[in-house]
Image (cartoon, rainbow, N blue to C red):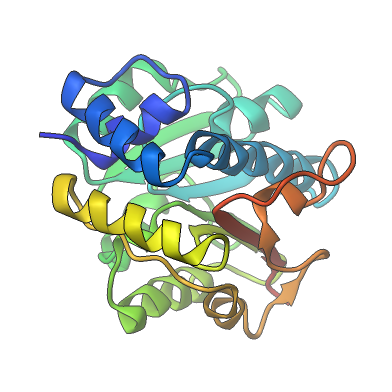
Length: 251
């Protein structure tokens, strides 16, 4: 059966996918020809955000919920390249993801990398397990990239954000990336419908305003909630993609 993590891995250029995953990935791409660029823009946002958090914000702890299958520039690789003492906790509820993570997401000797088998909705379990590796009295970057779109209920998605942000201290950060309906709305809706007919779990698209509500009470960093290619790009303006993102600091 096609699965989210493997389809995403296919779009990112990984090797951990099967014919069924590639078939769905190709079907979605018929509706959204730039979906591969969008997936890779999401990963590029992760790299730029983690780099900023380590180099400019002094963050050394990361809680990455919705890990996905390892490809390139995973959170711990970016962070520990900049400071080997960074500590990263990954969370996912897909046994395949966890099997690959334990084999491939290895830490530097001076840092730490851990993995939690939990659903994103079970924030209590996530935080209790994360506390075994992270010091939750010190700032943590909470990473929710491409995960809340698999939580269809808006109240439940908001509760996940609130629970995780409430558990970390002042000076922590929240990073979110999420597919949107605001870039080519008709094509995006058709692609989501095709996804939901053929892959699991189902996907929900949201608007930029939805992400902005999740950041309420936090200090949203410039340039705010934007398409992933426009968040502090390395060079010049980039074409809009189907993912919007933002990074905010907890005051």
